[in-house]
Length: 314
Image (cartoon, rainbow, N blue to C red; front, side, top):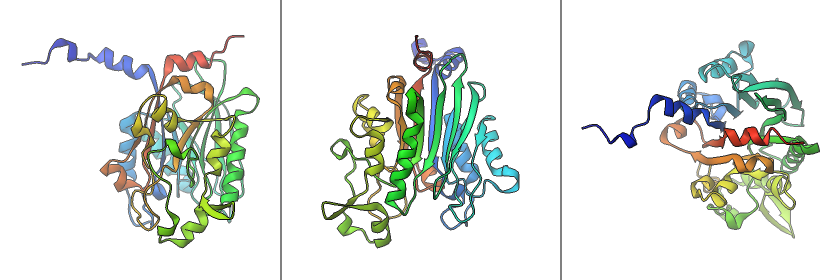
């Protein structure tokens, strides 16, 4: 017996649902699908996972090797995701060989410019786009904050605040390699550093405050503390929207010597975009764990509300 008519969605209804939302993903795919030691190849599975979301904007970290052979790996991923337009800075000699990238849907966006913020360890990729039919630009950025130096991370976070300067609207995805600062609202407790086996990790992820070593929360404080420059999408979804799963830990999904997994992968937007957020989730399925030690972040925005925000009245 067929289900009642009220439960059946027509093809046109499905298309309308897709047309009414903007899907944004952020994912650190461990060494670009090749695994921590470079002996695996999960690139096809990673692209299948991303393609299943049908994203309009992709913010990627650890595009290891994607610059080689005319950026063939970068374009292969972008093509698999429906012909997205990709952006990635060239790796710098003597610095990180794991660049970040951004991909955008040319059916929805014009590209107004592409900026590279050349910092001491890894550049930040910053395309400036316009949602078609809207006059106000949207700055996008993918960042992977320095894994070994808290002071560098603070500088990188301060650089990201410039994306919102002069009333600009921005959306940022990152592996922050540091922790959220509003700990009372989080669903995961910060690490107990007395129990962390990896002492190098302790040096990389802690800072000194009041004579004590504590978890490094400075990047998040810079971005969302005080009179906030940005809104943490996960925190907004977990509190204002009542979606507790939005605050799930994101990394490491594999290692145990660095303590329990933490919410170190985050997405931020300027506060004007927050009313358009429909949902936010950290996806850590078995397939995601096979590909990477980081969860996949998926944010969904109401496209009609976004159009209103990006068409300000004078």
